[in-house]
Length: 371
Image 1 (tube, rainbow, N blue to C red):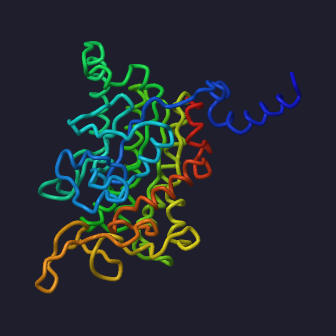
Image 2 (cartoon, rainbow, N blue to C red; image 1 turned 90 degrees about the vertical axis):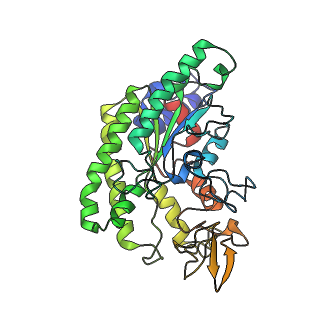
């Protein structure tokens, strides 16, 4: 064998083989994901909440879609950049029943979803979503079964469903958990009490990964919890971000245990927290400004108030005004005081998709070689 080729193969195995097994490194030169199945809350909801309850109002969606698109953002989310990067169409929400094509995957996320059964009141009495993670996974199981029945029956809808082999080759993405912590805080639990609950929250997450594995899932792309933006040395809520960091440590350890339990699966821990936190520590260096100030909001130091939500009409000094967007969302981090702008999502996606923020360090574009 040519010595140069020998060295190349050795280095390739050294880089990827130790984490996922040599047999999956050179599986296919035309490697690609045929579909993505996404489980999440508002950070990657592409229309589930809007289909089940109500659509966000303008200026949501204005930056990219030109209209509200069911996303809690001015434009695209990280899941949107993911599918674009993998040459797939935008994901349709499982809950959306109008003009839907599920052949390239489905999105089970909804705004305010939790990992555990929500403890807060659910919509319409409260703000919590009834579609917690176990229910999303149950929806997936039903979707997998019924989609194959439709394919076997044939007809005009068969081509809108994924093929049977798609489920084992698909990418399964997760970005959920923050609402479990924030709902607990809103219910007046102390930081110590919430910390004590984190292992149980993560155990519930692990149980759902095991359930999906039993249904044929093999490649899991798991984002850790994002920063909770309020106020520490760079403006973020220090006690709350300690909760996020504790959750992330528990999650990382849980995924390591799952890799041992399921050696045929590839389970990637993606450090989204660090990628997004850099927008608060070095905003100007990264092309952003005023990272804590909401682009679409009204009132106070951070242009945000729970009674003046983005897109709503409020009364100010006897005059009704619409809570609108800032002039240039592309240089802002916070969209509505809770969610990130399209620009911040794109910045974070570019970082985490490189593999430099992942454990094991697999770039998104190469992840399909590790099935």
